[in-house]
Length: 128
Image (cartoon, rainbow, N blue to C red; front, side):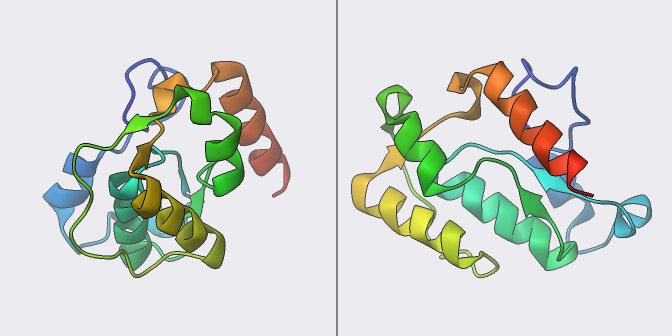
């Protein structure tokens, strides 16, 4: 998560942390369950894809077309989209990416109600 509003509730590993370590693994994460919750935009999906290159079982939280459509009234236009297509996305994530590319949509995670975010994390964490 990269929003300061949520960082006190969940551990934060931002994109700078990914860049700092490059393609090297952070050893304590190797056997950890990784949940990623980013902005619903092309950059957020690129970060998710980059994480999966290093930690393949990374799961997304609320990064799907259903969530985007539910909160589309809170979305804005993405000023610049990623130039390269992320290559480690699921079919659902690719559908979201296609929709975002067509509409230039961007839903910042901080606009989604925290109650909904907490619920999504609770459901995912209870599943394992």
